[in-house]
Length: 126
Image 1: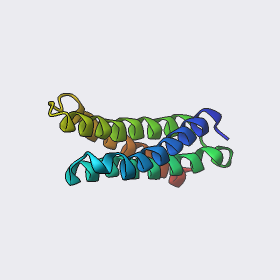
Image 2: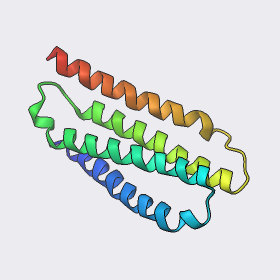
Image 3: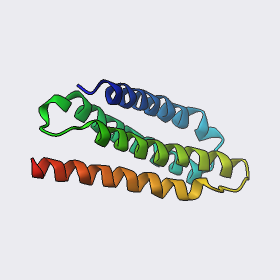
Image 4: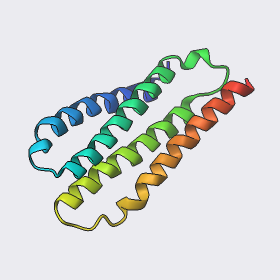
């Protein structure tokens, strides 16, 4: 087991449940349909990425290659992608400019995709 990644993935998974419930109940009444759908995309990807990274972290000892950097990159991508979406929703709801958060979302997505590509490559290589 990769303890640090397991703890972080578990934390992100718990937060996705909390944020999903928050969106379904509290935010549903105050956000536009478009902003609520955007928020839900962040929650959905956070859930998928946290759960899959948790599974990998729990089985880290089964891989014949070091997994720590890969899982931390997965979690970094998750954080940048989902949490920038949450920030964008909050800023748009407040009528403010998205600013720097706009480019952070695809950077987080790219980090996530690349980390999964590295994981798959390592699985095929070893």
